[in-house]
Image (cartoon, rainbow over all chains, first blue to last red; front, top):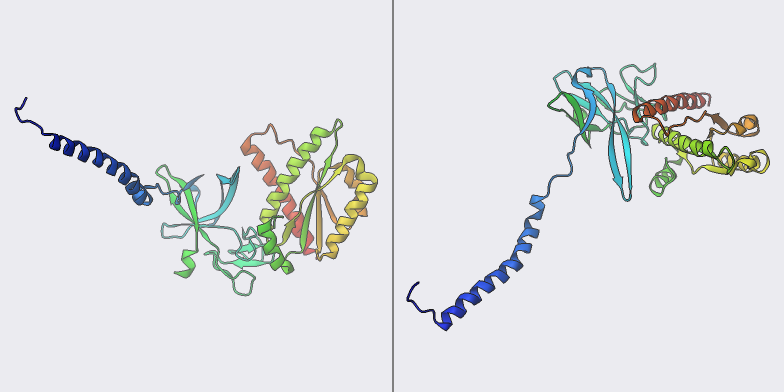
Length: 171
Length: 153
């Protein structure tokens, strides 16, 4: 116990600063939290979906890979099945093309017409794409096929992500 | 194209490219065939949706033609004939009616449309993976039929 006496003025000073400090903190904390919130949010995009197809099944010949994920659309949750044409580009890279025709959205098929080997064919209006996804001039499509982001998981399973514009054709 | 606000906008813009319309025919009754009919509705709806995805840019899937089973002979047939006629007048070159109701088979020639009858498969107790495979097979059959139909002009 000290012999120092605390004067009334000092006592009031201490208590008011203390209480004031808490109040200021109570006001500032949420503000700071809101301000830095965008930095803290976990990234929702960039999710990869496992396709169940193993790395060994892939070759330079496009392979049809179906994968399913859950999609929430307002109050309606549904399982959506997507298709991709996946092949190796020869330099160890994986190319996964989105089979949605750039013309009006049909589904294109690899070698879908016998007269056009090594091309993607759209049965609706005879659209053609090269293996790289590049649209063949003179057919209805005006842009190359889109791609999926693709990677191989640690246990050797192919995983596909977001749809991105075709990178091999532009490059 | 599906019958919803977003895709109909595209349909109106690109009408020249869309020359095929799909009409699912779904019966309703409350007799001993009720369960089969519910099953058919589920199966045909699934099938037409998958088919539409394949041929989105050339095909319009419209809301189903529904009728009481007792109507097939008579007023139901007449109404469907009107539908087909109206659709043809709207510029659809190919009108495809898809159904699992055997009652339509005998009226195939009475319709100005391509009537495709598919036996309904009970999907309710089926394993997810097996179900997908079976339905995919059916869709592939349909795809071939439709492409054939297109090639004939």
